[in-house]
Amino acid sequence: MADRLTGKERRILELLEGLGESTGWALVDASAGDLKRGTVYVTLGRMADKGLVTSRQEARRAGQSGPLRRLHRPTPRATALLALERRVTALMGELA
Amino acid sequence: MNARAVRRWAERLLSDRAVEDIVDPFLADHRVARDTTGVPARGAGRDALQLIATAWMAERVDALRAGEHRWLVGAASLATLLVLQLPDRRLAQWAYVVAGTLTALLVMSASAAMLRRARRAAPLLLLLVVASLAGFGLEHEGARAWLPLGTLRVQLGVLALPLLVVSSEPRRAPLVALAFAGGILALGDSLAALAALACGAAQLVFGGDRTATALALAVGVVAGAGALGEPVPLASYGGSGVFAVLVSAGLAGHRTPMRGRPRLA
Image (cartoon, rainbow over the protein chains, first blue to last red):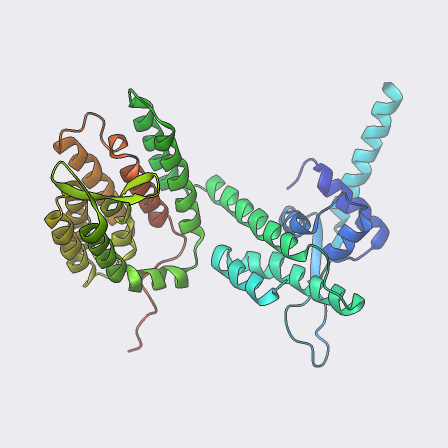
């Protein structure tokens, strides 16, 4: 269970908030250079292990072969964690 | 980017789960992006390389946390201590420790199929080692044990010892070890011969168990170096022994059994 989000995890969750369900490739394209294709899939795997995202394979179409794309979405727990982190950041900003 | 080559390398270096959860989605996304735009994505080959390297590192860190690298951690610590004891530490000694640790990590993550291929090739490779030393080996104090490789001189017989750990088939392995020990002893490399005999004995007693063979190799190299009057065992052998022990530790910690496919009744 994750207690804190890393910078990359936070960025991915922020992007997933906007995109809804998304592939790793689409997250990189939407991240304006914050994420890399060479690492985002590993981070998504870690996030799935931590219970921050769930994923499903897209359905295979007729005549389609090869590996299938994997679509990720944030779990309610990840959404709550992100909201909590935002509230804490805002509070810290007010106190500073 | 050649997707088949990427997957083949991923299968060789990563677990099945990592291939399915990390590499396959990348390849699928890459294919869709290429089909959509009509051109391959820029830098996809570099991305694939980085992906495999990152996934490999992540799996190694997980294995380290789970205690799967205990043999390698032990061997690397011992090797470091031995090199630290050397009165005239040289960069080459550390290079062998680093190269041995990295090779061991690679060996640990190699697929069982790859190690099975290595096992089949081991007797031939060991024969090549003896033939290379007989043909091109440098003679020093009556032993033809060193092979010149550019500016390096490597003690090839000792470096090849991990092949005896790979060659773990219970019936044939002791014979392979004995034959290698005989060949290398005829060239005067008594250290490699002693370690090979120790491996053969362990394989005979423990039925080709990799951990037992790797331990016997380490004991054989250390005891052999001590018996031959070396002031600091292992490290004074130009790091070849350190390398062999580290790679053997990696083989001992390999995640899957290498006994081959089960025979049908």
